[in-house]
Image 1: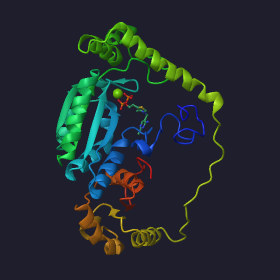
Image 2 (image 1 turned 45 degrees about the vertical axis):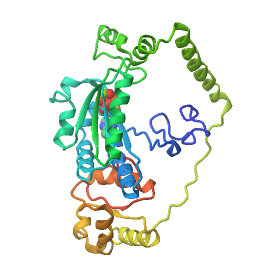
Image 3 (image 1 turned 45 degrees about the horizontal axis):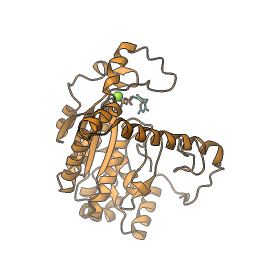
Image 4 (image 1 turned 180 degrees about the vertical axis):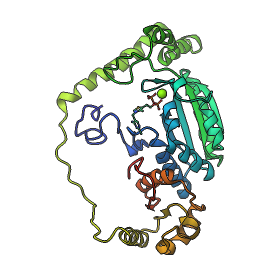
Length: 327
Ligand SMILES: Cc1ncc(C[n+]2csc(CCOP(=O)(O)OP(=O)(O)O)c2C)c(N)n1
Ligand SMILES: [Mg+2]
Protein backbone atom coordinates (compact mmCIF):
# COMPACT_ATOMS: atom_id res chain seq x y z
CA UNK A 1 0.00 0.00 0.00
CA UNK A 2 2.91 2.38 0.65
CA UNK A 3 4.01 1.75 -2.93
CA UNK A 4 0.53 2.56 -4.24
CA UNK A 5 0.77 5.86 -2.41
CA UNK A 6 4.21 6.47 -3.96
CA UNK A 7 6.06 6.40 -0.62
CA UNK A 8 9.75 5.66 -0.04
CA UNK A 9 8.74 2.80 2.29
CA UNK A 10 6.96 0.97 -0.57
CA UNK A 11 8.30 -2.26 -2.06
CA UNK A 12 9.78 -0.31 -5.00
CA UNK A 13 10.72 2.65 -2.81
CA UNK A 14 7.75 4.57 -4.16
CA UNK A 15 9.01 4.60 -7.74
CA UNK A 16 7.08 1.66 -9.20
CA UNK A 17 3.50 2.79 -9.16
CA UNK A 18 0.54 0.44 -9.17
CA UNK A 19 1.57 -1.26 -12.41
CA UNK A 20 5.11 -2.23 -11.42
CA UNK A 21 4.82 -3.76 -7.96
CA UNK A 22 7.85 -5.95 -7.33
CA UNK A 23 8.92 -7.76 -4.19
CA UNK A 24 11.40 -10.54 -4.84
CA UNK A 25 11.39 -11.45 -1.14
CA UNK A 26 7.91 -12.92 -1.56
CA UNK A 27 8.45 -14.19 -5.11
CA UNK A 28 6.69 -11.28 -6.79
CA UNK A 29 9.01 -10.78 -9.73
CA UNK A 30 7.30 -7.71 -11.06
CA UNK A 31 4.06 -6.60 -12.58
CA UNK A 32 4.31 -5.15 -16.01
CA UNK A 33 2.29 -2.47 -17.77
CA UNK A 34 3.19 -3.97 -21.14
CA UNK A 35 0.57 -6.45 -22.28
CA UNK A 36 2.02 -10.02 -22.41
CA UNK A 37 5.48 -8.99 -21.21
CA UNK A 38 5.07 -11.12 -18.09
CA UNK A 39 5.06 -14.36 -20.10
CA UNK A 40 8.67 -14.42 -21.28
CA UNK A 41 9.66 -13.03 -17.91
CA UNK A 42 8.03 -16.03 -16.25
CA UNK A 43 9.84 -18.31 -18.69
CA UNK A 44 13.08 -16.76 -17.51
CA UNK A 45 12.23 -17.44 -13.88
CA UNK A 46 11.25 -21.03 -14.74
CA UNK A 47 14.41 -21.51 -16.78
CA UNK A 48 16.42 -20.23 -13.84
CA UNK A 49 14.65 -22.65 -11.46
CA UNK A 50 15.28 -25.55 -13.83
CA UNK A 51 18.95 -24.67 -14.23
CA UNK A 52 19.41 -24.36 -10.49
CA UNK A 53 17.47 -27.59 -9.84
CA UNK A 54 14.99 -26.06 -7.39
CA UNK A 55 11.32 -27.02 -7.12
CA UNK A 56 10.20 -23.46 -7.85
CA UNK A 57 7.37 -22.91 -10.30
CA UNK A 58 6.73 -19.62 -12.13
CA UNK A 59 3.15 -18.35 -12.43
CA UNK A 60 2.15 -15.52 -14.72
CA UNK A 61 -1.24 -13.82 -15.06
CA UNK A 62 -2.50 -12.05 -18.17
CA UNK A 63 -5.74 -11.33 -20.00
CA UNK A 64 -7.29 -12.92 -23.05
CA UNK A 65 -6.25 -9.82 -25.02
CA UNK A 66 -2.61 -10.64 -24.26
CA UNK A 67 -2.93 -13.86 -26.24
CA UNK A 68 -2.98 -11.73 -29.40
CA UNK A 69 0.56 -10.50 -28.83
CA UNK A 70 3.37 -12.18 -30.74
CA UNK A 71 5.47 -12.57 -27.63
CA UNK A 72 2.67 -14.64 -26.05
CA UNK A 73 3.24 -17.35 -28.67
CA UNK A 74 7.00 -17.08 -28.45
CA UNK A 75 6.89 -17.57 -24.70
CA UNK A 76 4.52 -20.57 -24.93
CA UNK A 77 6.63 -22.19 -27.58
CA UNK A 78 9.79 -21.64 -25.58
CA UNK A 79 8.21 -23.05 -22.41
CA UNK A 80 6.94 -26.11 -24.28
CA UNK A 81 10.21 -26.76 -26.10
CA UNK A 82 12.26 -26.47 -22.91
CA UNK A 83 9.62 -28.14 -20.69
CA UNK A 84 9.78 -25.28 -18.22
CA UNK A 85 8.06 -25.30 -14.82
CA UNK A 86 5.74 -22.42 -15.62
CA UNK A 87 1.99 -21.84 -15.42
CA UNK A 88 0.31 -19.50 -17.87
CA UNK A 89 -2.82 -18.19 -16.17
CA UNK A 90 -5.18 -16.44 -18.58
CA UNK A 91 -7.93 -14.37 -16.98
CA UNK A 92 -10.55 -14.23 -19.71
CA UNK A 93 -12.80 -11.35 -18.69
CA UNK A 94 -14.19 -11.02 -22.25
CA UNK A 95 -12.83 -7.50 -22.77
CA UNK A 96 -9.40 -6.30 -23.75
CA UNK A 97 -9.44 -2.80 -22.41
CA UNK A 98 -12.64 -1.76 -24.23
CA UNK A 99 -12.78 -4.31 -27.03
CA UNK A 100 -15.14 -7.27 -26.62
CA UNK A 101 -13.77 -10.74 -27.15
CA UNK A 102 -15.82 -11.46 -30.28
CA UNK A 103 -14.01 -8.61 -32.02
CA UNK A 104 -10.61 -9.78 -30.77
CA UNK A 105 -10.27 -13.45 -31.56
CA UNK A 106 -11.85 -16.18 -33.63
CA UNK A 107 -11.05 -19.15 -31.42
CA UNK A 108 -13.71 -20.42 -29.03
CA UNK A 109 -11.30 -20.70 -26.13
CA UNK A 110 -7.83 -19.35 -25.44
CA UNK A 111 -6.81 -22.92 -24.67
CA UNK A 112 -6.68 -23.51 -28.45
CA UNK A 113 -3.64 -21.29 -28.49
CA UNK A 114 -1.96 -23.36 -25.80
CA UNK A 115 -2.76 -26.58 -27.62
CA UNK A 116 -1.31 -25.05 -30.77
CA UNK A 117 1.95 -24.61 -28.92
CA UNK A 118 1.94 -28.11 -27.42
CA UNK A 119 0.94 -27.11 -23.90
CA UNK A 120 -1.75 -28.96 -21.92
CA UNK A 121 -4.54 -26.69 -20.78
CA UNK A 122 -7.56 -26.54 -18.54
CA UNK A 123 -10.61 -24.25 -18.37
CA UNK A 124 -11.97 -23.21 -15.03
CA UNK A 125 -14.71 -21.02 -13.59
CA UNK A 126 -12.54 -18.07 -12.62
CA UNK A 127 -15.13 -16.79 -10.12
CA UNK A 128 -14.98 -20.02 -8.14
CA UNK A 129 -12.11 -19.49 -5.73
CA UNK A 130 -11.66 -23.15 -4.82
CA UNK A 131 -11.84 -24.33 -8.43
CA UNK A 132 -9.07 -21.87 -9.32
CA UNK A 133 -7.03 -23.04 -6.35
CA UNK A 134 -7.41 -26.69 -7.32
CA UNK A 135 -6.55 -26.14 -10.99
CA UNK A 136 -3.49 -24.10 -10.06
CA UNK A 137 -2.32 -26.61 -7.43
CA UNK A 138 -2.58 -29.43 -9.98
CA UNK A 139 -0.50 -27.40 -12.45
CA UNK A 140 2.13 -26.71 -9.77
CA UNK A 141 2.33 -30.41 -8.91
CA UNK A 142 2.68 -31.28 -12.59
CA UNK A 143 5.49 -28.78 -13.06
CA UNK A 144 7.30 -30.08 -9.98
CA UNK A 145 7.12 -33.62 -11.32
CA UNK A 146 8.89 -32.45 -14.48
CA UNK A 147 5.68 -32.29 -16.55
CA UNK A 148 6.47 -28.82 -17.92
CA UNK A 149 4.11 -25.92 -18.51
CA UNK A 150 0.33 -25.76 -18.07
CA UNK A 151 -2.11 -23.21 -19.46
CA UNK A 152 -5.13 -22.29 -17.34
CA UNK A 153 -8.02 -20.28 -18.78
CA UNK A 154 -10.15 -18.78 -16.01
CA UNK A 155 -13.50 -17.41 -17.19
CA UNK A 156 -14.45 -14.26 -15.36
CA UNK A 157 -15.87 -10.75 -15.87
CA UNK A 158 -14.64 -7.25 -15.12
CA UNK A 159 -17.27 -5.56 -12.97
CA UNK A 160 -15.68 -2.10 -13.05
CA UNK A 161 -14.25 -0.01 -15.87
CA UNK A 162 -10.81 -0.65 -17.36
CA UNK A 163 -9.51 2.48 -15.65
CA UNK A 164 -10.73 5.39 -13.57
CA UNK A 165 -12.94 7.53 -15.79
CA UNK A 166 -13.74 4.71 -18.23
CA UNK A 167 -17.01 5.88 -19.86
CA UNK A 168 -17.96 2.21 -20.41
CA UNK A 169 -19.77 2.97 -23.65
CA UNK A 170 -18.87 -0.47 -25.00
CA UNK A 171 -21.32 -2.32 -22.73
CA UNK A 172 -24.68 -1.73 -21.11
CA UNK A 173 -25.30 -1.20 -17.37
CA UNK A 174 -27.69 -4.19 -17.59
CA UNK A 175 -24.87 -6.45 -18.75
CA UNK A 176 -22.71 -5.43 -15.80
CA UNK A 177 -25.64 -5.82 -13.40
CA UNK A 178 -26.27 -9.35 -14.61
CA UNK A 179 -22.74 -10.38 -13.63
CA UNK A 180 -22.78 -8.91 -10.14
CA UNK A 181 -24.21 -11.98 -8.46
CA UNK A 182 -21.25 -13.93 -9.85
CA UNK A 183 -18.72 -11.81 -7.94
CA UNK A 184 -16.13 -14.27 -6.58
CA UNK A 185 -16.10 -12.62 -3.14
CA UNK A 186 -19.88 -12.98 -2.81
CA UNK A 187 -19.75 -16.53 -4.07
CA UNK A 188 -17.01 -17.52 -1.67
CA UNK A 189 -19.04 -16.02 1.17
CA UNK A 190 -21.99 -18.16 0.09
CA UNK A 191 -19.75 -21.23 0.03
CA UNK A 192 -18.40 -20.48 3.49
CA UNK A 193 -22.00 -20.36 4.73
CA UNK A 194 -23.34 -23.42 2.93
CA UNK A 195 -20.41 -25.82 3.03
CA UNK A 196 -18.36 -24.61 5.99
CA UNK A 197 -21.28 -23.46 8.15
CA UNK A 198 -20.09 -19.90 8.70
CA UNK A 199 -22.69 -17.80 10.50
CA UNK A 200 -23.52 -14.16 9.59
CA UNK A 201 -21.35 -12.92 12.47
CA UNK A 202 -18.33 -14.92 11.25
CA UNK A 203 -18.54 -13.28 7.85
CA UNK A 204 -19.20 -9.81 9.23
CA UNK A 205 -16.17 -10.26 11.49
CA UNK A 206 -13.94 -11.07 8.50
CA UNK A 207 -15.31 -8.13 6.53
CA UNK A 208 -14.73 -5.74 9.44
CA UNK A 209 -11.17 -7.03 9.81
CA UNK A 210 -10.47 -6.41 6.12
CA UNK A 211 -11.99 -2.93 6.33
CA UNK A 212 -9.79 -2.08 9.34
CA UNK A 213 -6.67 -3.08 7.41
CA UNK A 214 -7.66 -0.82 4.51
CA UNK A 215 -8.52 2.06 6.84
CA UNK A 216 -5.14 1.72 8.57
CA UNK A 217 -3.42 1.90 5.19
CA UNK A 218 -5.03 5.25 4.43
CA UNK A 219 -2.88 6.73 7.18
CA UNK A 220 0.26 5.73 5.28
CA UNK A 221 -0.16 8.58 2.88
CA UNK A 222 0.32 11.19 5.54
CA UNK A 223 2.83 9.28 7.66
CA UNK A 224 5.34 7.96 5.14
CA UNK A 225 7.98 10.01 3.26
CA UNK A 226 8.01 10.64 -0.48
CA UNK A 227 11.01 9.23 -2.40
CA UNK A 228 14.04 11.40 -3.00
CA UNK A 229 16.20 11.50 -6.14
CA UNK A 230 17.56 8.14 -7.31
CA UNK A 231 21.29 7.60 -7.89
CA UNK A 232 22.23 4.62 -10.05
CA UNK A 233 25.13 2.34 -9.25
CA UNK A 234 26.69 -0.67 -10.91
CA UNK A 235 26.39 0.85 -14.37
CA UNK A 236 29.62 1.01 -16.31
CA UNK A 237 30.11 2.47 -19.73
CA UNK A 238 31.95 0.20 -22.14
CA UNK A 239 33.45 2.45 -24.80
CA UNK A 240 33.79 0.28 -27.83
CA UNK A 241 32.11 -0.14 -31.15
CA UNK A 242 28.72 -1.78 -31.18
CA UNK A 243 30.01 -5.00 -32.71
CA UNK A 244 32.84 -5.84 -30.36
CA UNK A 245 31.66 -4.07 -27.22
CA UNK A 246 28.89 -6.54 -26.31
CA UNK A 247 31.20 -9.49 -26.93
CA UNK A 248 33.93 -8.13 -24.72
CA UNK A 249 31.38 -7.49 -21.99
CA UNK A 250 29.95 -11.01 -22.34
CA UNK A 251 33.36 -12.65 -22.21
CA UNK A 252 34.31 -10.63 -19.18
CA UNK A 253 31.08 -11.56 -17.38
CA UNK A 254 31.39 -15.27 -18.22
CA UNK A 255 34.93 -15.35 -16.88
CA UNK A 256 33.96 -13.47 -13.76
CA UNK A 257 30.83 -15.49 -12.94
CA UNK A 258 30.51 -19.23 -13.76
CA UNK A 259 26.72 -18.93 -13.43
CA UNK A 260 26.46 -16.81 -16.55
CA UNK A 261 25.19 -18.47 -19.71
CA UNK A 262 24.42 -16.99 -23.07
CA UNK A 263 21.02 -17.16 -24.70
CA UNK A 264 20.44 -16.25 -28.30
CA UNK A 265 19.16 -17.51 -31.59
CA UNK A 266 21.32 -20.39 -32.85
CA UNK A 267 23.96 -19.68 -30.24
CA UNK A 268 23.67 -23.06 -28.53
CA UNK A 269 24.53 -24.95 -31.70
CA UNK A 270 27.36 -23.10 -33.36
CA UNK A 271 27.68 -19.70 -31.85
CA UNK A 272 25.05 -17.90 -33.87
CA UNK A 273 25.69 -15.58 -36.77
CA UNK A 274 28.50 -13.80 -35.02
CA UNK A 275 31.03 -16.48 -34.25
CA UNK A 276 32.89 -14.49 -31.70
CA UNK A 277 30.64 -16.10 -29.10
CA UNK A 278 32.04 -19.52 -29.87
CA UNK A 279 34.24 -19.69 -26.81
CA UNK A 280 31.12 -19.48 -24.74
CA UNK A 281 28.83 -21.70 -26.75
CA UNK A 282 29.86 -25.14 -25.50
CA UNK A 283 29.07 -24.00 -21.99
CA UNK A 284 25.70 -22.71 -23.10
CA UNK A 285 24.92 -25.95 -24.84
CA UNK A 286 25.71 -28.03 -21.76
CA UNK A 287 23.95 -25.83 -19.30
CA UNK A 288 20.78 -25.01 -21.15
CA UNK A 289 20.57 -28.28 -23.03
CA UNK A 290 18.99 -26.60 -26.01
CA UNK A 291 20.01 -25.11 -29.31
CA UNK A 292 18.24 -21.83 -28.75
CA UNK A 293 16.05 -21.62 -31.80
CA UNK A 294 14.47 -18.44 -33.09
CA UNK A 295 12.57 -17.23 -30.08
CA UNK A 296 13.72 -13.61 -30.23
CA UNK A 297 11.17 -12.00 -27.94
CA UNK A 298 10.87 -15.04 -25.69
CA UNK A 299 14.60 -15.33 -25.15
CA UNK A 300 14.83 -11.63 -24.61
CA UNK A 301 12.37 -11.59 -21.74
CA UNK A 302 13.60 -14.90 -20.36
CA UNK A 303 17.13 -13.56 -20.30
CA UNK A 304 16.12 -10.40 -18.53
CA UNK A 305 14.31 -12.31 -15.83
CA UNK A 306 16.78 -15.08 -15.18
CA UNK A 307 19.57 -12.54 -14.96
CA UNK A 308 17.85 -11.15 -11.88
CA UNK A 309 18.00 -14.63 -10.39
CA UNK A 310 21.75 -14.83 -10.97
CA UNK A 311 21.44 -18.04 -12.96
CA UNK A 312 21.79 -16.69 -16.45
CA UNK A 313 22.55 -15.03 -18.87
CA UNK A 314 24.59 -12.44 -20.52
CA UNK A 315 22.20 -11.86 -23.37
CA UNK A 316 22.04 -10.64 -26.86
CA UNK A 317 18.97 -10.10 -28.91
CA UNK A 318 18.89 -9.57 -32.62
CA UNK A 319 15.40 -8.64 -33.47
CA UNK A 320 12.98 -7.73 -30.78
CA UNK A 321 12.13 -4.08 -30.93
CA UNK A 322 11.06 -3.90 -27.35
CA UNK A 323 12.53 -5.59 -24.33
CA UNK A 324 9.65 -7.24 -22.46
CA UNK A 325 10.20 -7.83 -18.82
CA UNK A 326 13.09 -5.46 -18.38
CA UNK A 327 16.55 -6.45 -17.38
C1 LIG B 1 2.07 -4.00 -25.72
C2 LIG B 1 0.91 -3.18 -25.26
N1 LIG B 1 -0.01 -2.78 -26.15
C3 LIG B 1 -1.08 -2.05 -25.75
C4 LIG B 1 -1.22 -1.69 -24.45
C5 LIG B 1 -2.46 -0.91 -23.98
N2 LIG B 1 -3.34 -1.80 -23.25
C6 LIG B 1 -3.41 -1.78 -21.90
S1 LIG B 1 -4.47 -2.92 -21.29
C7 LIG B 1 -4.85 -3.49 -22.83
C8 LIG B 1 -5.84 -4.61 -23.04
C9 LIG B 1 -5.32 -5.94 -22.62
O1 LIG B 1 -6.36 -6.89 -22.68
P1 LIG B 1 -6.41 -8.11 -21.70
O2 LIG B 1 -5.13 -8.83 -21.85
O3 LIG B 1 -7.65 -8.86 -21.98
O4 LIG B 1 -6.41 -7.43 -20.27
P2 LIG B 1 -7.65 -6.66 -19.55
O5 LIG B 1 -7.94 -5.41 -20.30
O6 LIG B 1 -8.81 -7.59 -19.55
O7 LIG B 1 -7.11 -6.40 -18.18
C10 LIG B 1 -4.17 -2.77 -23.79
C11 LIG B 1 -4.30 -3.01 -25.25
C12 LIG B 1 -0.20 -2.08 -23.53
N3 LIG B 1 -0.26 -1.76 -22.24
N4 LIG B 1 0.84 -2.87 -23.96
MG1 LIG C 1 -9.42 -9.06 -20.85
